[in-house]
Length: 212
Image (cartoon, rainbow, N blue to C red; front, top):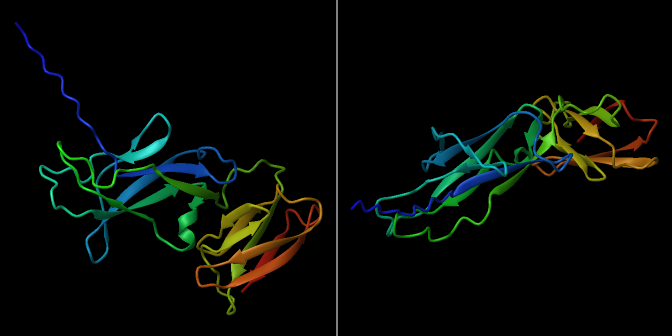
């Protein structure tokens, strides 16, 4: 007689991300990479592990902090980062990544705090985002009081929003703006803010400078 024992192995993914194109509300266009780092107390070091992409498009890192015996083991801090050629992750406004606490577990004990849902990471259109040829957009840059570019400043108008690149440049979609005089706002992580008026549609396709 052959007796076969079937065991159920529960796999927990303490770090996971769901990427969303902020312009369309859909999954991102093209390739994206989600990477993982771990805190060593003095900084962050890369974890040599690739994400598993689920059928729903979630980037998951299963079996993090699985131990032989998880009793009395503290959680550890991990950081999720995203690279996508057509986008800038929203978190770059004020952070270098999304930090999550991952709780240890073992074959007999679930994590003390169960993973609830993936981190939803909005991706803002970058300057090379493939807008349609006739898409309503404006071009520009954000500079500080000395004329230096401001990287990763938030530029927004009527729920359309982007972050500047390392050179302070941006391309802002204006599809949600009515035919009127509208206000484009910019702000940065240091609390600076400024606004400029743009007339729609006459001012579309033009270049603007926003000065802090």
